Amino acid sequence: MSANPKRTSPLDEMHKEKGDDGALPTAEAARRREPKALRREQLINATIDSLAKRGYAATTLADVADGAGLSRGIVNFHFASKDNLLAETIKFLQDEYTANWQAMVKKAAPDTASQLLAMVTADLDRKICTHRKLAAWFALITESRSKPAYQEMAWDRDAKYRAMLASICTAAKEEGGYAFDPQSTADAIYAMQEGLWLRMMLFGRGYKREAALGVVLDTLCTIFPRHFASGGLPLKFHEEDH
Image: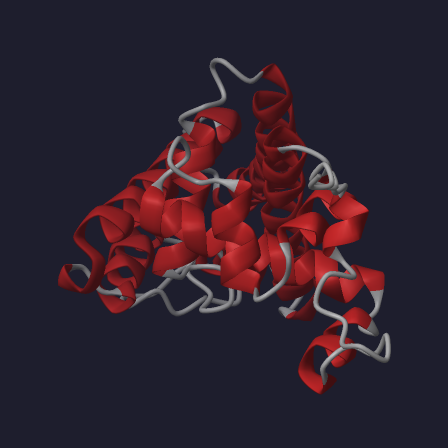
């Protein structure tokens, strides 16, 4: 009489590749010893790759596990469900985006033109603006209408950026005596950047980062002529000169 097949849990998956002596193969054992945070980041990066390659609907936990070189049980152990994994992926991209532009603004000179230039060029930074990350971001955002949690997280990212951008536009208006509305101008710049991201994502190598940067710099010169010279070079603004 044959025995009933033994059912396995996700945690059992973590141990299935052990040898007769209970030890894991060397490479697998090394992965098991990696810190929890590192393993989560590996899975999130594999999720970004899968979203960029397959889109939202076709991405599965199995795809993510295979892409990270980890067992499927590990994915379930860390995230429990696809929704949780994708929510954490949005948070990862959001946190990386926010930390990047904040660091660039902090590093820039304190004058208004330099701060504004840092804000708007941060979106094209090579750490953030890659085809895989743009594709993953748009794949997630297209689901936000049916996933309120995704929409809330995306809006939180946008709100922080737009508030800072509007603040700098307000300072530029006061300095230069411009007639524009600062919030509307900030919204227009933000919309331009979203459009450039979308174009870069859709056309890939057919639309290069350098071309997008040229659009950004020309726009700054047009909107803020007293703050930027031709080519987007920040001008040191002196109120007494105007």
